[in-house]
Image (cartoon, rainbow, N blue to C red; front, top):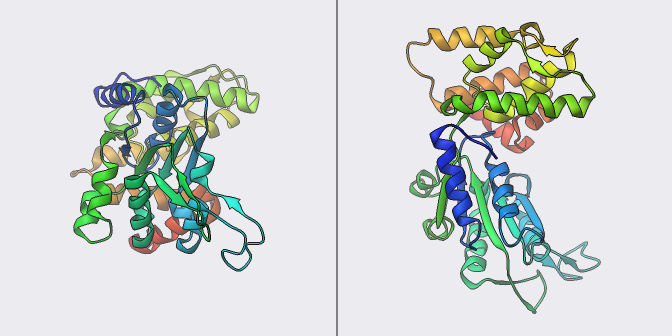
Length: 304
């Protein structure tokens, strides 16, 4: 983890201070900003680093399967349960559980999670044995949970339990001081991954990369650099190696009289990614770092 920008330095500093504790941590920020990376970093800096780090994407688990996935089940607990299976919480014992996209939990699932947090114990589905939970809990969301509480979509008492330590990961457009280091990191990473000889970025290409606001945040930057590294011919990444629409996007940013809202930025980025993947929603969801279900919800919401 590295940071020059004040917002990211504050986030990392707070993460480092709480890493040695067992307090619940709520990490918020836009999609692709690096919440998952920070959650992993907290685990590796903690006394639990030698134990399991278990990540659960709440958006990809249907409500009827969530309880079995989290808590496990005994043989015969439901049709098809031919043998007992431990859940994710058991797999995380002595380690850390990361619940991503926590806002997607159903009301019933929220109630069950609240009980586990309060009692630090649970039972497998169909089981009678109480299992003590010894795991650190970190939750991630790009949703305003306070707003979700007001709208009746999220339990207020659960939010209070989760929001012990709140860390906000700023979007990349607020972290321009970090861009050059991030670009250098991604160039080195993808050059090694794909066996390319790219070692540096030409000044015009760097200027263009630094001028863009990245509505998709660090994930979008990583995808842009990966593509550029793959198509580059020599040891230097040139402006022509970058996506053709990048220059136009920067110009559009400069010509905007009023800053785009987060919803407008997200809608534009999804539309751009859908176009780039020729409508392949599975690939689009992978690039965006969200589930297909979440992608379909956003397509409907923004009428794309």
